[in-house]
Image (cartoon, rainbow, N blue to C red; front, side, top):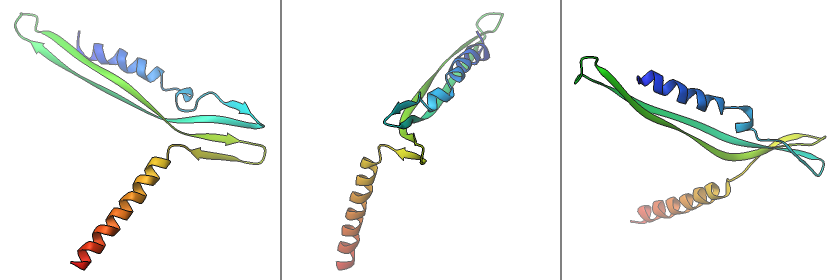
Length: 114
């Protein structure tokens, strides 16, 4: 099996999963609103091959793999009045930024006093 014969079907299968539904999930209607989940999708492929000259036919061997990563990032809220994107998961990032700022300020103050 050549590398191309191995990778092409794998890439094709991953490509088939790259649909609008993967990024934007099924809409949910509740309380006069339509909520559409939104995700970030990343794909990765890797592979390699080797030509073995042990035999007269120079047999090629190939191997590899692939993966997909999906992270929810927010929702789109649709009402009669407006449509807006609501990001989820910012709490830990904001807390980390605040703590970094506090420690940086403390460190800078200590250096100026020295």
